[in-house]
Image 1 (cartoon, helix red, strand yellow):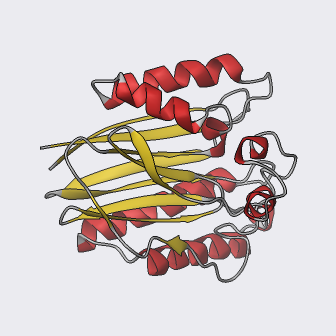
Image 2 (cartoon, rainbow, N blue to C red):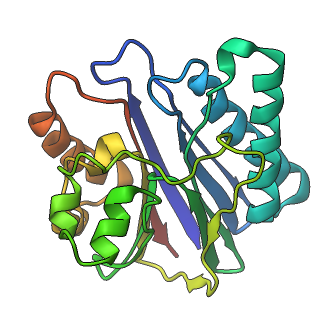
Length: 240
C-alpha cells in the first residue's frame, strides 16, 4: 500500500500557532501525529512540539511505537520542562496519532484532537473527545451537533502534561486498511467548523489529499469567527 499525505496548519486569528503535526513513512507503513497546545497556557506550543518530535524520533529509531509508553514519556518531558521553567507550569497539549504496520492501523489520543477513518467515503471510526461536552453527548444530554457550540466543548478532562501520569485511549482492535480508504487527523479548531457528512462529501469528490483538504478548508474558513483558533489537518489517502 501507498500512503499519500498532505498536511496544513494555520494560526487562525491567534498571535501564535500552538498546533504541531508531522508524519513519517517507513517501508509499507508510517506514523502520523498531531498535537494542539492548550490555549492561554504559556509554552504550550513547546509542549505540542516536544510531544510530536519525541514520537517521530522514537518511531524512526524503532520502526514501531508503543502508544501508551510514548505518550507517557512525552508527558514526562513536558513535566520536566515545567519544573525547569516556572512560566511553563501549566503547559500541556492534546495528542492524536495513527500507526500503520502490515496493513493494520492503530490510533491513540488524549484530549479533543480527532482521528477519522473512511471506507468507501464513509466514516467507519472516529475518536471520542476527552471533554465535558463529549461526556454530555455520551449521557444523551446534548447531541453531537450541539457539541460543536457547547460552552464545555473545550473543557478537557485530560491532556498531556496536565498531571504526573496520563492514560491515552488506544484503539484495541486494529483497522485493516484497504486501497481506496482514507483517514485524517485534526485539531478542534478544524473539526468545530465542519460536519462529518461534509468530510465524507468532500472526500468523495477528491482525487488527492490536497484536493480533499482544500474543499474542507474552504468550508472551515467561511464559518470561522474573528477569534478563530489555530487549526491543523493531516489527510491521507491509501492506494495500491
